[in-house]
Length: 372
Length: 265
Image 1: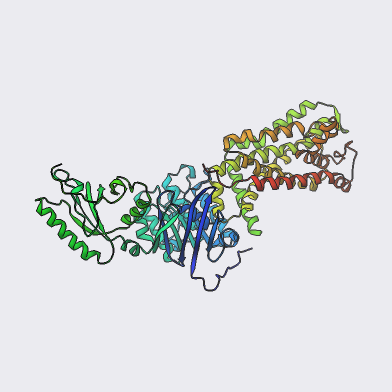
Image 2 (image 1 turned 180 degrees about the horizontal axis):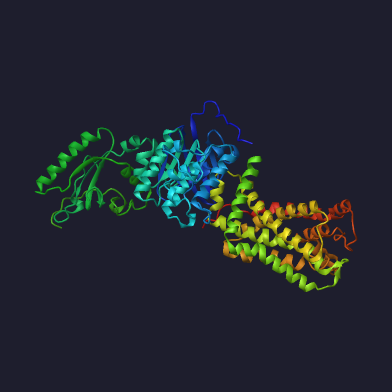
């Protein structure tokens, strides 16, 4: 029996609809009222720190658990109650999932292909991935999927002998083998080398270009910036920001930064610029201990211009040179770190080019003191 | 429904491929039970039980014990290991439904079990000159027996934290069957309450029905007198009722205890 053709409910604009989703495990609420929609053919990325609630949100959408509260629809269907109808139309790449280690790569792909065929889905072909040609020997469809995953040479290798990155690529091949209408990718490139990561991005871009709707979770901001039509930044179970990359970044304003000349100044001497206090940065824009001002709101560029003039005057008056002075537009990373930092008790996001606010917040510049 | 069956067949084939690549599992499910069968036959010697040679009495009832090895122990191990390694989660994330995934495991186990019973039948034919009197009844009890022990395995895997501890979790059922099931003696020969308890154990109806199906006599109410094919079915009805009741109980236990994913924290 082939899976009956399912017609989307009339007027279905959003392929994925999440409204007021809450998910609790005992007393702990992992997701606290999350809402977003994903239209057909869009790639929507969920960003967030570890424990932000991304995977829980995705697993509710995948039908692994019923929501504690709120509504969730995928292709207009309830992922838990209508799993049987929905599952053939959905591809899932779990953040972590086991394999039958004693099967070869080709046998594993062959099994998944067979399971898809039994459900009435056409297995993925070379065309799905914009790949040329087929090889002889192994089943053509299996070969296509293996080539797409960059594992054609590993066809006869037992899965337990694959590296972590190769397993992720096999994972992706299995997720897309049924040509899903909706694809859930939970941290798809974790553990991959840069080359494999870019190859995976290409596969995802091809799938999106083919009309597949994709929900992606990732730690890699570059991945989200490159792939996502829209994104949401989650922290501690809530969505703090969502929109296109441009919309999200627009709120981050302009950033003025320079290396902290520790010999003659102290941080406390620095003046506020346009009402904004400086923050210390480590290894980021300046590659060293530095200072940054982030100017947000209306007319940020004009205000940055005036602020730089003020800063230079201030430095000239003291006979100092501001090393590696730069003005640049805020990035997704700035926004991400601000969201993560705002909720952290110390406002302290680490030592890898991130802001560290003394005393848990912006440091007001005190009276000028020299030579300390 | 048809999709579930196709998925179950596909998963069962993969299970059998994996079993063929694992010599430990092959030994446990094929050779170990036959070794035990041989030991049982040596224990009873030449005495007559229920009107048949003791050796024949034991061999004809062995399908009830074989189930514990081929299905129960094998599946508790398999379900637990695959849950902890997140294989079950991955399968659930793909096309097959939950019943199809469990059904695939049961189907693979059924094939292994039928292979064991076939080996037993060949043994009985060669050594004792006996062929099964009621093959449909033998197949029916095999299918129901596999269903029962598959459900029990699903329930017990839910109680088993990891694959290493599976050897411990299966022990109570293993001992209960090896000691309590009427392999080397009729259940009604046990004194008082013990006899009633033995009659209600999950493997007992399977042993008694298999013995009746193999030998054609009444080995359920005892005595072993020859029965027609219809008479064998009628005689086996109470045992089938107990078996079906156990399947219902095991189904509830499996629903309650089985887990698709490891416990967190």
